[in-house]
Length: 118
Image 1: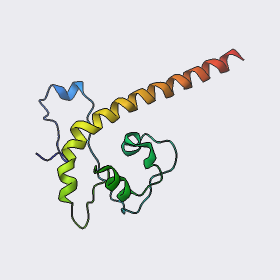
Image 2: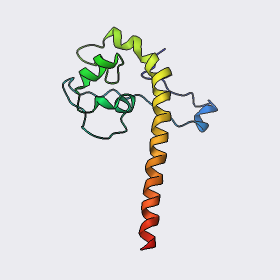
Image 3: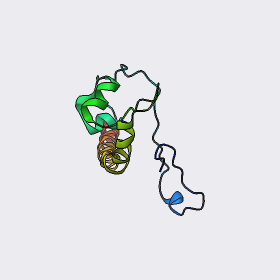
């Protein structure tokens, strides 16, 4: 099963009920650093200490291919972890993202309401 390029069948009833998500490989050098600070990126939601780390370090320290090597070849060790990432880790991260986004929007709404009071 190719989890990197899996698409939904156009006749699939789930297609209309679920948002279409696709894992994107970023063609960046492994020594590229993630931004410091708050982020909704999967690797940072998984472990907030990943901010400012290189992509290679994030993958090696977590043991998960958030940024899989695509050149000069894919790593078998990363390919074997892709299913775990997709089936176990990403659903947990998505729940955390929804929770954080709800808090973020609630804070924005509260700030907007407080402006109206003045």
